Structures are given as structure tokens and as C-alpha cells.
Length: 122
Image 1: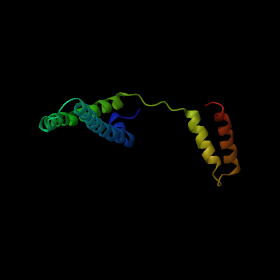
Image 2: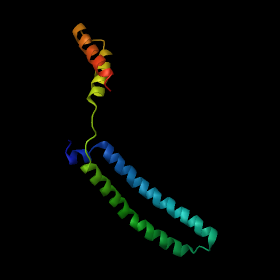
Image 3: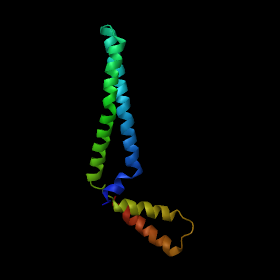
Image 4: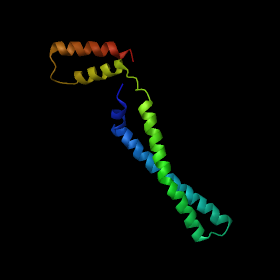
């Protein structure tokens, strides 16, 4: 099992946090635009009150974003590692080794046998 800090510094986790932050911000802006379109159709829209409301909503946006990222990081740090199918890994390695032109006859025989044994087990 990886240590939680090492898992949090993985590039995929960092990319997911960035995408989560982006998604929250876009969600807030999209929701505000949808709300504004609905209000414009049904009633008069006072620009000053709309700007005040938009400012209030967007002021909580960073807090929601940080809370979502912290929740995601806690989830990542306590989740178990993904199980590895060793037969699939061995089969891929054997296939890759057999594609190498620099194998001796013994190595070729060994990797062929490994590939054959692991082919049917995954």
C-alpha cells in the first residue's frame, strides 16, 4: 500500500483536483447564467441587485471549491489500492519481451512459456 502522502502527490490526483476546481467554478457561473436567464423572462431585473447577488454567490465559490478538494483528497488518502492482476502484467511483459529482437534462444523460450501460461488466466 502506498503511503497516503505519496498517493496525494501523484500526477493523476493533482490533475483531478484541478479539474474539480475548474468544474466547481464553471458550475457556479453556469448556474448563475441559467438563473439570470430565468429571471429575465419572468420579471424585471435590477442590475444593482443582480450584481450584489452574483457577488455573494461567487464569494462562497472558493470555499466550496476548497471543501470539495479536501473531501476528494481525504477520499483518495483512505481508499485502498487498486488490485493488480499479476497474470495480465506478466502477459504484457512477456509479449513486450518477445517483440524485442535481442533475445537469446533461452530467453525466447522462457518468455514464450510465460506468455502461454498467463494468456488463458486473465
